[in-house]
Image (cartoon, rainbow, N blue to C red; front, side):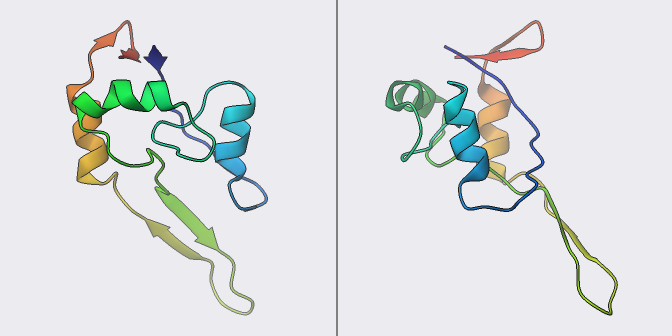
Length: 95
C-alpha cells in the first residue's frame, strides 16, 4: 500500500477533524487506532511506526489584547525515523 505525507491545516479545531476527514476519503492516518486501517498499520510496524503519525508542526493562538502566540515544533525523532527508512518511488513513500 502506498502512503503519502500530507500537510493539513484544520480550520475549526474540532476534535479528530483531520483524522475523520482523512478516513472519510479512504486515506486514514497511519497508526490511527480509532479511524485507521489496521492492515496498513501492521505493514508500517517493520519501519518503526508505533504511534499515530500525526504531528502539530505549527500552531497559532490568538490572545485578546496581546500578540498572537506562535509555536513551532520539529517532527519527533520517531516519526522522522519512519520517513528515513520507508522506501520511496517517484516522490511517493511506499510500503
